[in-house]
Image (cartoon, rainbow over all chains, first blue to last red; front, side):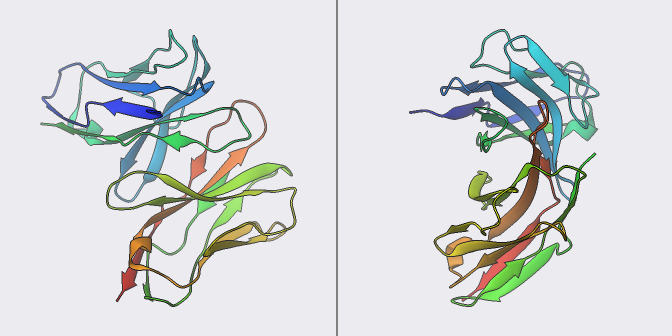
Length: 112
Length: 115
């Protein structure tokens, strides 16, 4: 049972490049989320999705794009990476509104 | 919008002792869920405990228990018989039952366990 996975686990890129972070879950959970974690800020929501083809902005969506064509996948794209997007990114999923979120292992992204 | 506040950025506890981590939240809703997540150095987010707001009884999970004070909007986590493996960041989180709302996290408390 793979659960929820993220790839890559580590990524170094340069300013201005496009980067896509992948998230895959095997539970068929309806809800999926992307967070970024920065020192002093805790976890901040970037985007979330209640179902395939339904996405919504979170607290810090600027500079990010998401899509959800299949229930199990929720990729996050940085269209033109900036140094301020250096962070640890977590993907999460939950069955519904009433249950806890399960988190992936995180992706550490460094933008030079 | 709901907010979650963890007023203790860092705490420490002696091994085998008890420690309480504080969390307060702000909401106008009457039904919601509260969670405590643990993040060890591996970075993996692990659910520790969950509390439904409509339940008056405090949730417990082995050595972990909460003190849920709904009127005061307080949700503290008590760790009994602390172990070295309890050293981690602990995040308090709130989830509304209204609409497609995600978790709202506090900024976390870093717990150190002293042998």
